[in-house]
Length: 417
Ligand code: ASP
Ligand code: MG
Image 1: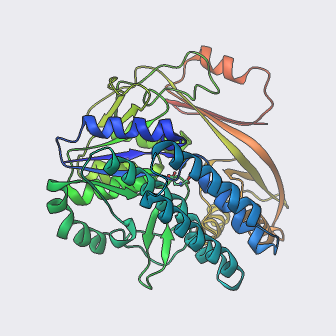
Image 2: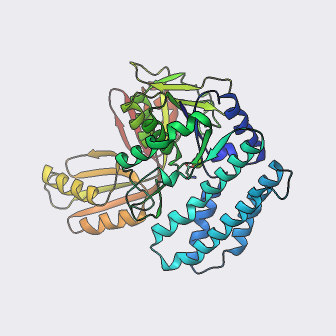
Image 3: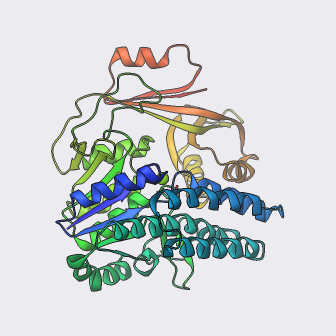
């Protein structure tokens, strides 16, 4: 039993959907559950639509162009203009329009989830219909019937026991008969509302299904050959890791590698389910295998985490930063759900590097400005080199304004403008 996940880039056009069908077709001898994201940049477009609605602006034109985008894909895939998928597409867009009209009267995060979920619902309808049309026996599943979450809209947390009992009750039997096509990223709250798991959460959805099904493996099909030691858009001469340990992969996602969603690794590691990252352009290549093993990365990993804010808290009088100061700071960081990406302290100051979030930064500073002189810079990048070499440090530091630097035995990190 296997779980596949295809991201938005893999189904951004009709050719993409055909390619996905080809890959599924080559693997359907094993029971298979396939998680699919929204097509191309649909999720961003849906976020913009919600924004327009909340700002009381007209959104119909943008809804039309998103409809047109999906319609072009459908037309290229189905020669029959009366194919049921046309009707389903129109219906989902009507539901989207209704949700957009309703959004202003709702809690914003709840409206977000209801609206944004349309991206994956629509993409999976199209993919399933195409597979069925080309002779594959497959079934569309509403992931919300299986993924049970709490009511924390936009970053809902999984109710594992409920999710697991729903998944194990009927899916293994169904999977014996047909390929399952379902959505990533979405779930349902105890109140029956649609929830989402956080942007790029489809990898995590695949891991949830795989864990509950005790699958043999999860494969994330991507537009890169596997897990590379750096983002090829930022660094020349990247190398592919043929294999990584769970810990190494989790560490890379922690420092900001965007190849896998950070929450994906842990449930798979707990159940020793291998995670494969492979190219949908070159499905014959093995890609990267992430599993439990003793391993030392073949090449240093270079990770850029953008949109960082560096905040320094300076003690006012001639006292020092004490454990009591730190304890209060950490208490507030926890309370405000602010995750520290890097920290450093000196005699009279304490600095943290965090993901930029103006509202959270403002709340933190508001709580502490009476006690400290606070300085901060935004729009920074945190660069991490895991298993650094002196040459790499020199190359990556060159010509950059370094605001903070930290070196341990294995890691070198700088915050730069
Ligand atoms: N479609 C969602 C997003 O773009 C979820 C995902 O792709 O993983 O964030
Ligand atoms: Mg995506």
